[in-house]
Image (cartoon, rainbow, N blue to C red; front, top):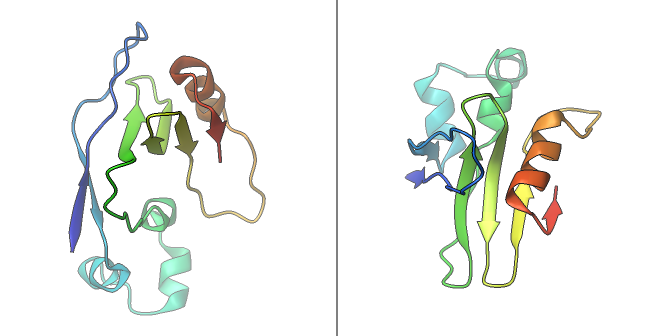
Length: 116
């Protein structure tokens, strides 16, 4: 029911976070633990972006999943590394998605093939 996502380390001359993140694979369990009983409570919750990061990962030998964050605040919620390329994902709950500084920093520092 829980997935540990380890951080990606790169030699980029920046201090990087090295502790793993924990994701609940079941939104119902997570919502119950933080006392969210209705959709209105969910959408009003101050940690909605964090809750929205709930990701169900698949087991794959062709790709590895990580997250990436620096001590100055740049981050990627999900970094998928395959033998051919690195793909970055920033997960936000919003009606108006936009590029944020973290995404530009990650593209540059990690040499990502694509960012979503």
